[in-house]
Image (cartoon, rainbow over the protein chains, first blue to last red):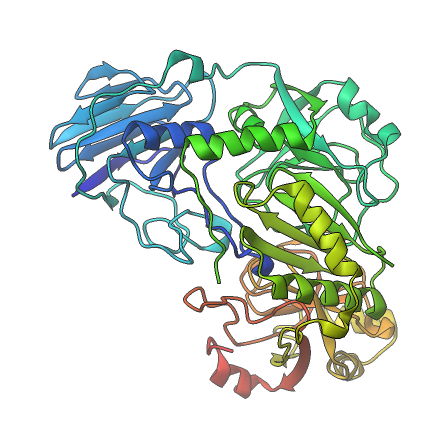
Amino acid sequence: MSLTILTAGGQSLIQDYGRHGHQAEGITTGGPMDEHAFLWANRLLNNSFNAAQIEIALGPFRARFNQATTIAICGAAYPSRLNGQAIRLWQSHRVAAGSELTMDRSEQGIYCYLAVAGGFDCRQTLGSATTVMRESLGGLTAHGNKLAAADCVPYRTAEAPGQRQVPERFIPAYKNPVTLRFVTNHSRTGLSRLEQHPLISNDYRVTERMSRMAYCLTGKAVPTKADGILSQGVTCGTIQIPPDGQPIVLMKDHQTMGGYPIAGCVARLDLPKLAQATPGTLVRFSPVSVSLAAAELAQQLRFFGISLRRKV
Amino acid sequence: MLPDILQTSETTLLMLFEQRMNDAVFAEVMAAANKIDALALPGIIATVPSYASIQLVFDPLQQAGGELITRLKTLVASSSAQSASPTEHRTIEIPVCYDAEFGWDLASLAAERGLSCSELVERHCGRLYQVYAIGFLPGFAYLGSVDPLISGARKAEPRRRVAKGSVGIANQQTAVYPAESPGGWQIIGRCPLTLVDYSRLRPSPFAVGDQVQFVPIDRSQFGRLLDQPL
């Protein structure tokens, strides 16, 4: 069973929940930029939380389903049509063999997720099929390539789940401005409360320098004691302050080590809001307690049945 | 000196030792990392040590951040007399061809330091390096410390492409680029071997705590070893 890509768009990548446990070797986790949309798409289809999907950024995207299946599309509002008929996002759809899907560029937001029942069936490396281009890992080729026209992406047979849709209250509107809650870092490699002050009392803007590795923001310069710190492990959401004082938020394909002072870490549940923010979007940072952020993440992990086990 | 331990996100803890790059601090980092590994706590996804810190990535459904911090504080403070034998560390030999064809910055760095190229090479090979951290790319090991006589600042303008296997110097660090990548280090030679293998259980040939010895080879040896696994 397979899908044939007719138009791949700017950056279409196979993503599952990520490649976890290898950070000590410099291998990043990768994974979906908008976890919320990704997880809902799998849930709509009764898939494992980890089932591989196609993450689409910069449409248009066109594909043909060679065999019948059920699909769901969640994320930015890409106008989508199945065999010419408009279909709703955040909802599952039965698809007949030979059906053609067209997704046009979205007016709002960036990332959109195409999921199939049973997930796309791609070779795993180190326990994951997630694509990290700069590491030459994952994807259809297993060597970190993005999808291209004429690619054939296999999917499994799966029981057809009933028609389901995401409750309205869980469908986000990708807004401007965006408020990012973050766990503050006042450690010796973080910021003092005084140094942090500009970050929480000014608006910042997303610049054109944004990618799966990091989003560079601009605004009032945030002061730091030193230009750099001895490199230490970082995670997605980490807010780094380079010498020019312009904050950088690390995203899913971040390098595993960072050498800039750290203002804190964006709450995991707020990262999708930043991921979907186009250049020019206003960003506000707001401190949040780690216990509240942790409680919210734990709730999401339980809701979507997510379980991570240590690799060897 | 006991490290600070803080929860930096929903899924990460950071242990911060004295922020200096030296053997004494690094020994503390390694001792703590060994104790943590020996505990084999459920729900620890990754332990990421570096010069003066350890990041722990954990599953919040299996571990609570606050409890984990308490546990680690006790562990680190405990006497090491009863600690499990440390993780095996190895000395890894890396063959390097320092010919001008590969050592793009060798001549200029040597001239800047008032040395001949062969003196620079001798000083680069002449000591054992510690793997202090792994990051930037899979299997990119930050090695230290370089002989001060051959140290060089990062290039003002990084190169868009540094060849796979390139050996570089940046201040007190040296490293091998495991894959082609942008890079700002002073490139003094190239290793012909393929270092990272994703089909291995541990794709990176280096682990923090290992030691590295560079071994000079000539152009024809380079050719014979090209793309062989380490």
